Length: 165
Image (cartoon, rainbow, N blue to C red; front, side, top):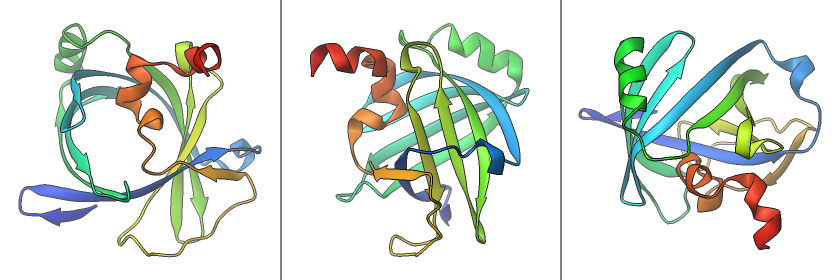
């Protein structure tokens, strides 16, 4: 993330996963998150991860979907648990794996619950045109496709896609 005043510019690309990445993972963590607001202009997320709580605000993405503003602060796990009770319906649960790729790393999310079967890899970059090592298990790029955003998956889970397409 590039810092711009008190906000940061998040530059990331997202991919579906088509192969076995788990042997290359160096860390895994269970994540539970909900949204106080999931409108396209801004999302306000509450997350519990690794025994820590977070409050994150994200702005709309640019035209490519690669960059958007993000503000995040750590909050206590108790505060996060309380705020999760106020969230919109549709809590997201997933296991996040950290997978090195050259000098960078992918965060690979294996979704659980109503989003089970969906696995998305994200890589955070310092600039939109930055090149990076693409492992064999990386599938189709879905950067900028709103249906793959966590806030969208909360409203329309992956399991429901087959019944509507």
